[in-house]
Length: 89
Image 1: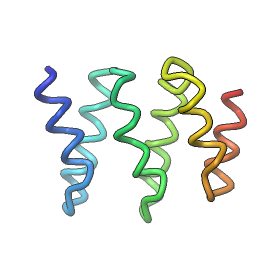
Image 2: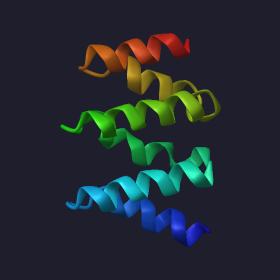
Image 3: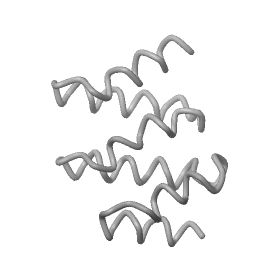
């Protein structure tokens, strides 16, 4: 299981979109809050699907991860991401 998580985290940066989407699905299926940092780069992705999944991850695990996770959202340049962070407060 830990090997699957590590592999999925590395595949979030893959150039093939199907591979990246599969990696996101794998991380959600494992339901491990420690993978939240892997979703941070997806907040800046050009594809809105990945941004929405990153926000879903922060909504699921942000409270467990602590205030630095919420601060990441609140300090983001995108207004929608900041709104999601404000909703977690």
